Length: 273
Image (cartoon, rainbow, N blue to C red; front, top):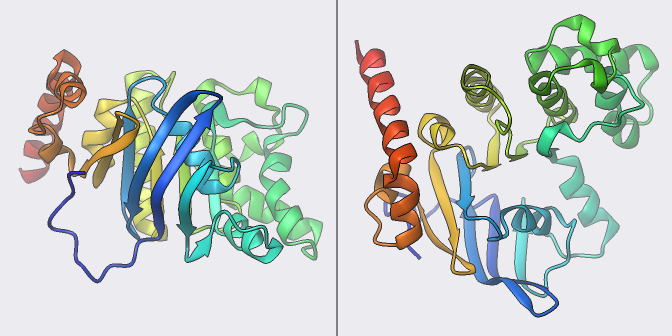
């Protein structure tokens, strides 16, 4: 597995995956996946369709039991059956699923309050409301979105509402599954900027599944590539451009990859000026 040689040897990963195997019947999706996620980074996860990006995320979160392998999240065994271990992971992770995955019968404010009511049961209703409002504003939504149903929101606003819910418990670790999918280029760029701003302001570690090359170049510190049932490389995107692997070359040096590289170069020149 290609790795970034610049990673300090004394940095303790916030997520450690070793020898992960996931099967669906006779289909092997992961066969010995190893991966470290470092504290304070935005790690992008890419791979072709069927390479098990979401399966990897669900395994790390304990939503799926892998067939083999070890997973540690925040120093806790993610495969543990101990309720205290499960609570430790749940309390310290926030998840934005595709399209927000909001409860359709609840308002945005009520959606954001769900994890608060589950884990902070003694909070009065007035404080729950104020915390939900704070998270909604933090996600870049107007205050009046608090009382709207998900069906009354645009796709981009639903994603932001889902992000507000993911941030409800102030978790140090945030999981994002295709956060910019379905957004127009302007909306996607705005969401990328929001993620980077929140990551820097709150000291978050972000595990980000995406197909969006612009996102990789704009905000990811490192990128993990799933291919051949393993993580074949983990490195800054500029290093991956030179990796001798067919899928990686097609992905990063194809027409869309070259366009994303050109956009990133233009934006870096503007910042230097």
